[in-house]
Image 1 (tube, rainbow, N blue to C red):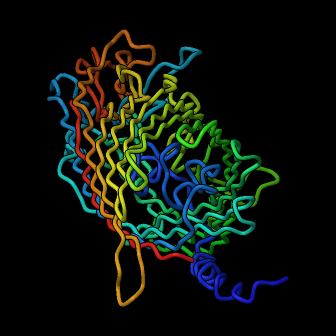
Image 2: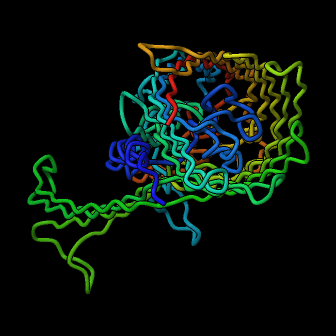
Length: 491
């Protein structure tokens, strides 16, 4: 028999689905993995209390109270990278414009890499100071077939921009752009939205399952360009064809509850990322193209928000005080396959990153109408010592979070309100370049370079000359501070 209340119960879900439908280009989940949602941002794979279970461990959805939650998170990140002072002997002189080098066959050829004279570069910037970010969170937990099938929806949406992506080179090529280095796993990665759909259900009294999808996007563009005068490229004709495809990254989990007070979880998250690829087809007036071609083709590809495959185990135990009060403690261990990392320019690091094992501890005190929580998390950096040409900046991170949930009555409507705070400390790290590194800093003005006009060598080319922004090293650290509020109404 149909439940006559079904339309009213489904209305909030349909409304939320309508609001989220235009956001089908949601992205990967680095912000959610870093900041979390709810009372337990670091240990949610075992301690989730709301719709965040749809992402972290959908097997916990059968144990979540039904409801629609709306939240707001304010974040301040203060990331500091201080570049070490350069030795002037490493500067590249303007003579580099006249320099050629010996090719493999011994003949003079143009420089394979063409740096800009150091004096003509912009200032080497130190990444310093911080900025404010804010997010809206929307969560839904709804029982479809009792505890046998529960739906979870979660969206984490930056309020300033729906999508933030920026690219930078990790080596000497960045001299042509910012001429600096920056933190690799923060910045624009924290400005990416996330939308997750999860299902969970019980198999027996002691076993539950869960599965979900994180929505992502893949963008491709083709840009035909006509250049009527190659000597004046400020005047061109250009059109563009763009296609955006939705992608899905799956995750799975199981939960085992041998008793009312003990629970174990295991979860798997597949690799997720957002890719942008493009092709420029340049046509010039009165130009001889290679046989069979009618344009000069340029291609590019960027990867944003790469999040690695993740395996996690969790365990929790509750200690009832009486019928209305109880303590629950939990721990989560998370393995992440950072060795497959692909950076923003779709390149794997020359020196493979390290897989990591992080740990989080969570505790919660529940009493009639309220709950208090405390989380602590330790995340080691996957980035190895950057002694060579690459400049990936990252540090070990310690996080502490505390929260309060309480029943609220507003105009006769019963709600649950949450407030929470979190602090992340990026531990100070010193990086020094070494000449014996596996992939050392490039000598951009080769010692054997010769003046193409005179055939003479350059005295200033002796030794190492480089514009690599990270040479000879840097120190880095940072703070991330967050505070959030949310309201939840039952369905």
